[in-house]
Length: 186
Image 1 (tube, rainbow, N blue to C red):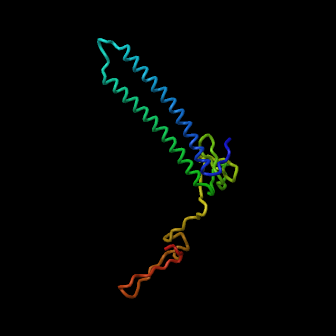
Image 2: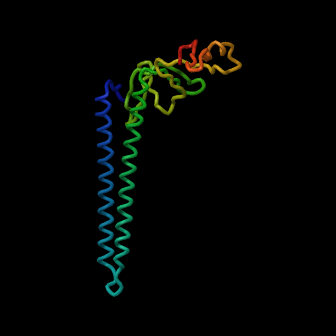
Image 3: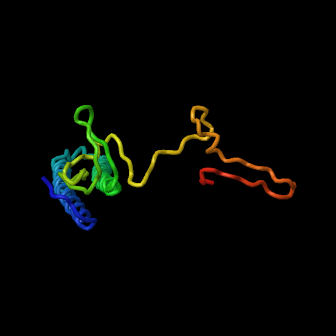
């Protein structure tokens, strides 16, 4: 159970520790794979038939394939780090937002008051204590937002005619028309 993280420096420090641990494990695995590959290559060269030596193009091909695999592993590690950073940024952006989470009888809602890191991934602290993973969110309403305005052309909306902007042509052809908007959005 992780403690809530209070500020951005704590979050960045947590990410750096997780990234360092991941890189360390990946480096150890990659180093042992390299060593194993080189030992096998050396053994293959040592015990080849001297009357029918292995083609050097095969060695180069094997080295190129191994290098490709190494680069793909590094790319997977970097993609994981990017995903972690993206999730953290998303979670940080939700502080102060009202969220709904869960399904059916377990559905609930509340205001995001903070973030907690649990097993290297961010979880939202809803109403100060409930930890909610980002994957369980069903709805997010950012603080300070309201419902979207209705369509002024909607025939179902009885106030549509009052909300629509009106254009009044001017009496003289050289003057530009005036626009009146009762909602104040133009």
